[in-house]
Amino acid sequence: MAEEEHSSIPLELTVVDVYKWAAEIGQEFERLIDTFGADSVTELMPKVVRVLEQLEKLVDRDEKEHNEVSELRLDVQRLQAMYLEKSEHNIRIQKDLEQVDESWKEEAKELLQTISRLREENKQLNTALSSYTKGQHAQAKEISDSDFEVMARLKETVDRQRDTLRAKDMEINQRNLELEALQSQVERLAKVNHDLRRKQAITQQQGKSLVEEKAHLQASLQGKEQEIAALKDRLGLKGDLGDQIIKEELSDMTQPADTSHMDGKLVIDLSDPDRPRFTMTELRSVLQEKNELKIRLMEVEDELSKYKNKLTKSTQTLPGEVYPETNTVWTQTYNPVEDPFMESSVDNRDSDPDRESCRSSEGSLYFDSDHFSLMRDPESEEETDTPVPDVPEPSPQQTQQESGIKKL
Image (tube, rainbow, N blue to C red):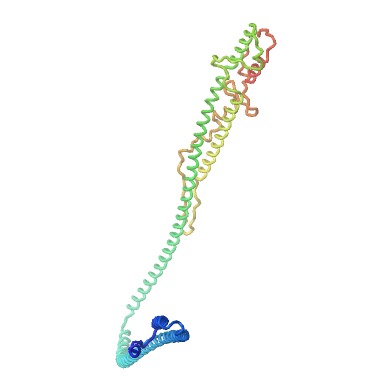
């Protein structure tokens, strides 16, 4: 049985095998304890445990050494493969060098043969040249004087044409310079034109907004003027209304009545269509708002005239450039597009009847902007010769009515 167990032991032990053996030994110890009791294995168990621990350490170290040996073997195999590759590479390089050496030797032989052949050709050419120069010299002596004259005329013609070509080249260069200057001038004028068009578009947009604001203000002003006209129509009737009120109060005084509860109050006939419906405070606020709208309208018209003057000033001739070579001048005139919104009536704002109406009298009423009160025009008051009847001393109610009439 021991031989069988010994034969079953693997050649390379691992930690797992040690743990397996420890489990089997533990089972054997349990059987011994069950059979003989715990005292029979008390001294043996620590020794077996120590042996197993040592065996575990040895197996662990053996595994590490085995891994290192396997890694070293792999390194050796890799180095051997590299050595074989390098040796093969060296062999290939040696063969390439031998081939290069052989090819170089062959090229050297070919070059030597070419040099020898060229030397022979050079000798042949030298002999041919010497014979040719001798024949040409003899031929040159036979040239007549007429041929020399023809050659001289041809030379003069060539020189003259060369001078003409030089002059044409200079003229072409000058034209190119002028063309470049004109192109730069055109680019500059195009840039100026673009800037002016952009400014004109901005000015037109501002003019449109100002015209719209002016129309809005004029509409508001017309509404206020209509309200003021209605108030003037109503206030124009208050002179007659005051006389009527006085007459009614005189007639009421002839009748005995208890007027103690009417002290300090204004009596108004509700059936009278011309009775006063607005207070002086409301009338002053309406007139003040009208004056503010007129002032705003004047400011808008001034701003419109300013933009129009700027547009008229921009219509001018741009500065040109004079080219002294050709005595030419390059100029361009810029005329901005006329803005349909820029009306000529802006400059005639001094003759605006609405503007004059805030400084002069309108009918028999005019507005004093310094005191914010509505007063009658003294020239429009009608002189009456109707005698005033003798009346008793007016009551506080009559005094308040008369003071209101005087203010109106």
